[in-house]
Amino acid sequence: MKNKLILKVIGLIAIFLSVTGCDQLSYADTSSDCIIKNMKGVTTDHAANFTYQACREEYPVAKTERALSDAEVKSLTGRAALNLTDEHYSGYIYNGNTNLTVSQITITITAKKSDGGEISKKYLHNLSISPLSRSDFRIEIMPESETIPIIDPFAKKEGKKNQFSASTRIKAGEYTWYISDAIGYL
Image (tube, rainbow, N blue to C red; front, side, top):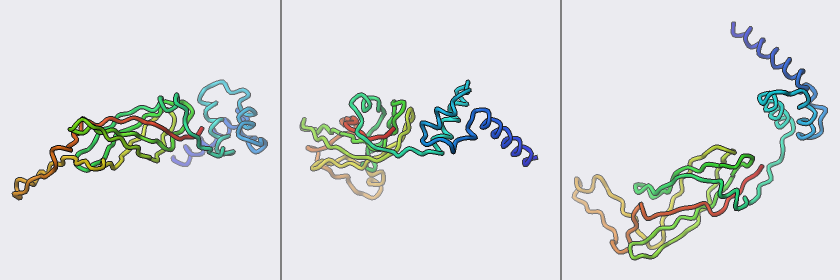
């Protein structure tokens, strides 16, 4: 039963390829040529996407990374917060660009100190976010000369006290972040 289904699927794919002209992929010189030659007679989005994907697989395009424009960086959104238990800033980034894969981001994180001052640092993070999708990120941070209060749930049971300098304490809600730069490819 399973073999019959597989044979039917293979037969349908073969018919589809011959109808759309994808059986002649080897006669094209580039991915663009393949797409142009094989889009003749294609009338549905599904068939067009299938043809595009088949040509891209047959003729892979080299990925040339570049810095994203300001408008492309503004299309990167998300949410993030400081995790006080392990000193990581984590969240997700959504890539709102329709034709660009993001491969690296620079996140600027600013911490407001209790004395009114601020500390800003840039963090470089490698990732891969396809167009119109999201990816989680996690960055270890620790501002210089600052302590982040970490509550030890076992401290009272063991008779210990948490110690940190109240004059330089940063609270979780006093962090802000934004994506300052990004790199990607088409």
